[in-house]
Image (cartoon, rainbow, N blue to C red):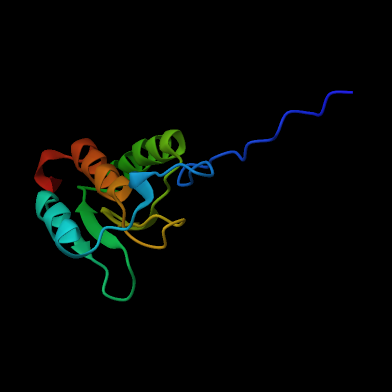
Length: 123
């Protein structure tokens, strides 16, 4: 009788297969982090933890909610979900990679995408 094929572990959005490396889940530290933050307009480090944050401003609640809907669809496609808070025309977004317990290149790339989706005065 043949032995069943060995099972390979599945990789999640922020995970890698055993034996592989994934630079997207490496935490950004030091000069790499500072360089990445300089490329992002209005994003700042969260002092209490290893994350980045930005607050977007919209003319009203409906515009803010529309932006959040667009971000939610992107987050689902990329399996990279932000923390956020909204109040009337304001949306605060916090990004970090859960599997790395910190900021990674995936967060920086996601931040760039959010800025592209935001109204021009929020970029």
